[in-house]
Length: 123
Image (tube, rainbow, N blue to C red; front, side, top):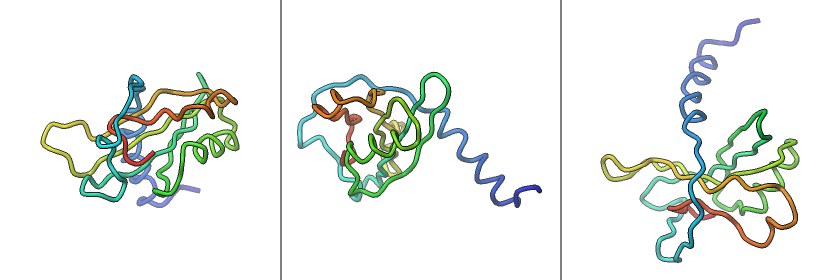
């Protein structure tokens, strides 16, 4: 059975977002440089489960999610790693509209330090 046209076109629009995924270098971030997911940037928090090198996925998540939620969700999806991301709607012209933290293995050591993207949208 063929998917309805609206579902197929939505899937095709999502493909470029998935192709843009890239790990950003981890750096210290000051609290004043953090952006809230609901402020004027139109930011959306994104959780990306990764099973290297086989597959990756990404899902927009509520602003209440923490890196522990993303790590737990990723483990439940069968991923070996996870990545925190942000997608921005309102940025200055020519500014990057997305940001990714590093790809982090799902393991006990990951509990010690979250790896938010820079700029951060509330992770």
